[in-house]
Every structure is written in structure tokens, then in C-alpha cells.
Amino acid sequence: MEQADEITSWIDRFVRCQLPLKRETTKATYAIILRQFLTWLQLQPGCAASFHPATMTETAVQTYVFTELSMTSISHRERTKSILSSFADWLIDEELLGRNPTRGISFPAQQLLAPRELSADQRYVLKELVETEGVRGKALFALGYYAGCRASDVCWFRLDSVHHLTRKSGEVTLGYKRGQQRTLDLINEARKPLRAYLAYKCHFNEKVRRAI
Image (cartoon, rainbow, N blue to C red; front, side, top):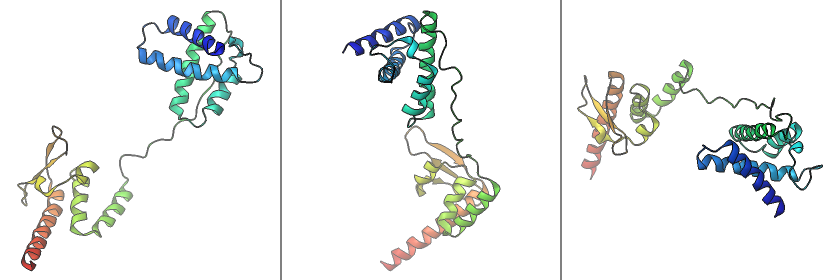
């Protein structure tokens, strides 16, 4: 209990001096991360039961962010480092610490996200695969490739979303959330496979009706 009270005292002093104008949510985030670090630090070899600024060494900080937090995201470790750096700067201002132990600590760059645009070879292979799926696959591909529809647009696409579809013009209503729908004019490359699919559906439904 005494250790917890002492940690709380250090954190409260830091927050009061350094974060007076920050939002309460920001103060809470700083307090949580500092408490986790200071609690961990007191359990390390050579550290006293009570926190002493001199124990906040570069080795301690590096061990914490690279070992103790090894299973967390890079962004969380970056945030932890930033908060510990602010805490160390405050200790330096209070003449309780001689050097900021977070200096020189860096993290590997996060892996880049996959490119949002397909290469020419990727588009060619995709078109080849789609063409084996029949008129429906071609129509859905055309909506995404030529009309620029998002994946969610295609997933929620309904036949009654098509309006005034002819050889020379046509438009579709996209979006499944009320207030977020939009109308899109279709170019010929999108109209042609869509008209073929609608004709196929009409022919298929007629055959089913006659069979019944």
C-alpha cells in the first residue's frame, strides 16, 4: 500500500506541474502508463522498495519498452517512450535526474501497408480470373474496376439499384446506409457487362417461370 501511495504521489506531482491544461483523458493516459512503468521498476534487481529517480536509467527504460512491452504495438511503445520522456524531463527540471534516459531509443519502422492500387500485371490476372466466373462475375468486376465502386458497394449491390440502363447511358445508386447513398453514371465498359448480366437474369427468370 505504501509503495502504491508513493507512486501516486509522484504521478500526481508530475501531472499537476506538467499537464495542467491537458484534457482529463490525456492525464489519465499518462497516469496509467507511468504507474505501470514505476510499479515494474520497483520490482527490478537493485531497486529500492520506494521509487528513486536515479533508478530510471537508460537500461531500465530500454528493458521495459523492448522486453516488458515486446508484445505490444510499436505505436503503444512510442507513446510509452514519449510519456516516460516527459516524466524524465520534469525530473531533470526538478534537479532530481541528470539525463533523459529515453534519448537514443528508437523503434523499427512499421511495415508499410499493401498498396491500394494494383499493378498492371495484377489487374490482368484479376480480369482473367473474373472472366471465368460468367456474366455475374464480369458485371461485379466492371462495377469495381471501371466504375470505381468500393467493396462494400459491390457487396450490397441490388439489381433495383440500376436506373435507365441503355447502350448509351445508365446510372446506379450506391451505398447501403441512409443518407450516404450516391448516384454514379456508368461508362460503356461498366454498362456493357452489367446489361449482359441483367439480360441473362431476365432470360433465366423467364425460363423458371415457364417451368413452373
